[in-house]
Structures are given as C-alpha cells and as structure tokens.
Image (tube, helix red, strand yellow):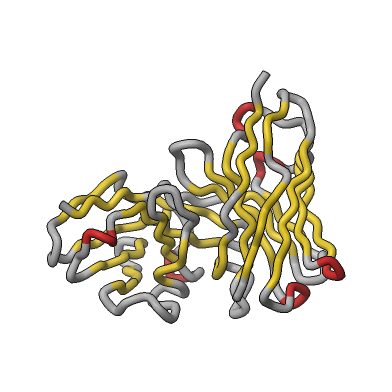
Length: 110
Length: 120
C-alpha cells in the first residue's frame, strides 16, 4: 500500500492564494484519480475536487486541483481566500482495491 | 435530496461487538457502491470498507480484516457494518458514505456520523 503525505497546517490571509500538496509515496500519482475533501469543525466532510481537477456543482471556481508527475504529487489551490475556507482538507486516492486518505491539512485564514 | 443517517454507535467494552446501520434515502440505493469511513477523535479520515451495488465485492482496510463485515440490504435501502473483537483503536466517528457514480473510487455524499467508543 502507498501513503499520501500532506503538510500538517498552512495559513494565509484573506484574499490571498494557498496551495496544499499531497505526495504519493509509491506508484504514480497519475495512475489513480485524486479527490479533495473539506471538513469544517464539527461537520462531515464534503467534496471540493474529484478526479484530480473536477469541481462538484456548488463548489466555487476559487477551488482548483492539479497533479504533478515530476513530484508525484497532487495539489489543491484555493484563491481569493475567505474566512469560511478555514477547515481541514484531505486528499484521497486508491489502488486496485484500497482507498488511502492523506493525514489532512489544517487551513487557517487569518 | 440524498440522505444518509447512521445509527448504532455507543460505548462498548474491548473485545465486544457492535452493529452500525445506515439508512439511505433520496436516491436509488441499489445502484451505488457504498463505503464506511472513520475518524478517531482529533485525527484524520481513515477508509474502513467498501461494498459493491449487489454485495458481490467487498474491500477492507487491513486493520479491520477478519473483525469487521460490511453488508447491505437493497430492499431496505440500508448499509451495515458488523464490528467484532473491538479494540480501543477502533474508537472513532463512523461515517456512512455514498460512492460516486463515475467509479468506485470517491465519495460524493457523507452521513453525519455515529460515534463508537471502545473502553472498559
């Protein structure tokens, strides 16, 4: 099995842009789709990005996803930060029969 | 509106058993893979198990294999997780999740979760 490694925390000011990385330990990041979930305190997770770079309806286009094969990582970028974006963010991918979540990144908007 | 409502959580002693249920509504339950994902207090998300639409395929994280069983009753629009030989490290909020229709690899809807506490 592989692991997905995320930074423990990131912080940025309102209106700025932040990028959260998710590095796959083995196997190609491009081989399996990556999803990103947002979890606000006390709430269930919700999907903000699926299939590497697709946004569900209702998710603002301030959220974008990408993958970089050279670093074997995926990234979630949030532009025009708002205080409501403060949350934990988890990447998730899979292999032939298992799912793996990253450890999560706490985003602070201050 | 898609709704997933978990029940069955509670306090159980180490070595004990518990059965979680998830009542699904607002969609054709029998057409979707389903999943259980857990979150220990103050920790991150951990995938537990997935089940195919007709129950013919089931997958588990290594740490629960042989102890947990995922199942479903399409006639009752319900998903289950039978948990045996529970350990302290199984303490978590357990989320029922619908897997997206585009493939078996992602969640598109989450329940509100039910808390399982394993302690003496």
